Image 1: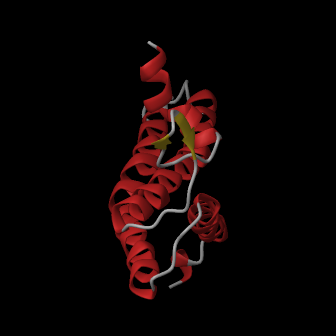
Image 2 (image 1 turned 45 degrees about the vertical axis):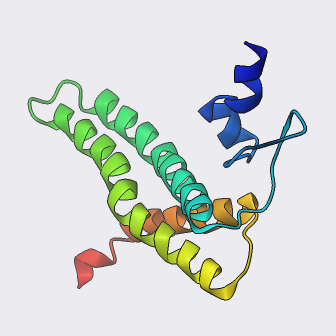
Length: 138
């Protein structure tokens, strides 16, 4: 049981402690710069998923609560939740690969905090564009 805690640690614990890609060295788990393409891609993608869900799950719960008596409106919460999952899986994979590719091509290592900043910033931009309804004016 002790060996599984050192290697696994749980997904939520990794996210909250910024240890996105744990490495085991001398029996301890520590966070180090992300140097390979898969490590960078995984770190950026994981934060894209977490930051998107942190906005879409409360919105889906609010929609479910406010539209619970409407005949068809209650299904809007399902669409909001699906947007929070499908969006990062499709667009998040591409943008994460692009960011990791640029870092890899430049020969630069990425710290996990940079992955957090990139994807939380991207999610913030998506939320701002959604609220400002810029796309509806085009």
